Length: 470
Image (cartoon, rainbow, N blue to C red; front, side, top):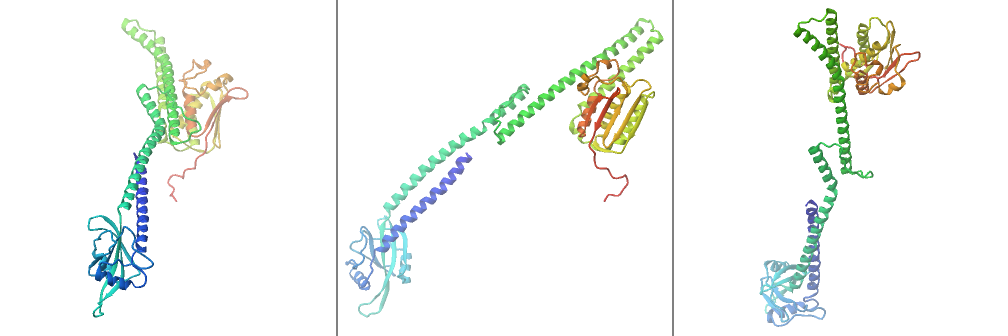
């Protein structure tokens, strides 16, 4: 409709302009014909006098005659009319004609549209000829002009036919433009219809496997929208798959401690119900096992909550953090968990942009792994230099075939299944380091053991507390 309206406006403007131009040209031609008619040449004053006195003689000269099938009449400034013999009829005289004759300017002619006494349309030229004189006294009389006219019917018929042709052509053009615009709009919006159908299908069935075919060479808005939709559904499908995998893995990991916890609680309950007390040593072991399982459950739930937090929640808490202070705080916790170990540290100042609590948790997880796999009385070496944190233990090390899986969720080495842990610690480390713009790797250390390496980009050093801002 917009295309048709725009074309209609343009065609109407061109058609109206064309009609007026043709009308002007036709009127100019009539004006030229009228100008060539009339009384000219020597003796025209005498001819006017004769015409006014007799109103029977047709004024003419040797050079020009009145045009055939024309109206010709002599008019005074008072409005007196003398119609010539060869005149087709009588033209109605207006006040404008009398004013033009009264001005007495023979160099100009006045053109207008008018009617004859029968109401027929005519094109009129009024031109001053000469002042009259009284034949008896010789005194000057009123100004006399010549009024010549030709019929306008043929010209108006031509203009009417032109208007009808322009109207028909314009109508056809507008209808054609509307049809073409509709076809173009439907062709252009066909991909949008497919996209709408795909969105409705996803909303109705939650099927994220649907894809919209897009020409690889196309780069218009609809193609970019289709590619964005395909990317969105792919991301949603991957997110759903990861969510389902996380739920399945979490259920599997929760099943073991819950089963053990349920068994121990049932033993304690049955002992109370049957009245047969459990030996003190066994009861103490059962309570210790219950406590350990509850601790493991709490740790697992905390790790799951950490992994389930959205990127937006993390972004709100990101700030400039001193990595040196974070590592020193984690070292204090590691020394409490492994008092029998020797932990050496060489940490230098370095600032990073991260969430403080998440960063500390990641460093603690790395140190916990080192403490867990270090032999009794072993040594852990920690070093922080220019944003590179290395933690090296002297434990059994990681087999080469297991290194690609160490950062997977819930993955645990077969040799470490008996040790406490949820299998999420290194996954949280990898996610936290990646969000801070860094990278983390684990590798076998020369001479045995494992080296964890964390590289974090630096951030601007914050001003000292209490200093005046510049």
